[in-house]
Image (cartoon, rainbow, N blue to C red; front, side, top):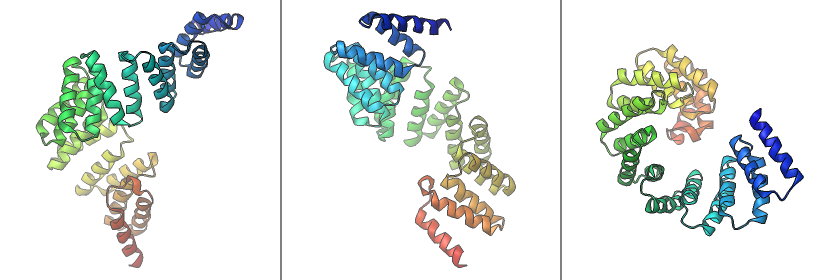
Length: 309
């Protein structure tokens, strides 16, 4: 209540004296602190009409627009700030990050690199570059950048996570496992690390360990459809069809439009002789082929064959 009273006090001052620009700036800060982004933006645009050459105002407008998920407009504001102050690291970083949010990775890279030319100890820039290179399958560059991020910030569990992923991609499975376990040491509730370990063990044929990690994944994130699919396949191999079906039906309660879940469930019903449910979920899998990892043409042939039988 005290903080809201301060906003009311500053608002009253601005209403009484619209040209009290310092109070408007203070009001922007208070609005930002309390998540009133639209109100902050309104004051920033008012100030920018009078101080268009103030890079800090453009920068803060970019932050607010980013908070509002208006990334294209945030990019314009950050660029306006940089046009006035070209080598300000915060402006460079935020513009790179806004491009990263829009997945325009090639445009993001030069800004993070420029920050590192100015400040070579920015762990976040190294992490973001590592993340981008990972997305682009530039494995060696990703590993180099993620290692640099960890040298500067050894507690960054996300950097360990992506570094583990890169080692797995390049075939160094044991190092990947060690790094995923490091993730869990730093962040014991990070379900994606459990899932990725489970997937690795499943691929290796270590079903018992995979099952253990999948159960932990679903304990932490019951909406993880990929974990549910793999665990259901394991349960089916153990002839626990009822448990496998219940697991996937629960998964569909959270997301009925997952193609892989429907496809796997269809085949579980096929194995148990429930042809109607097999047919139903096969059709649902086809209808949601954007989340289907099998060839939809293969599935269509399977469905036609079933219709003709």
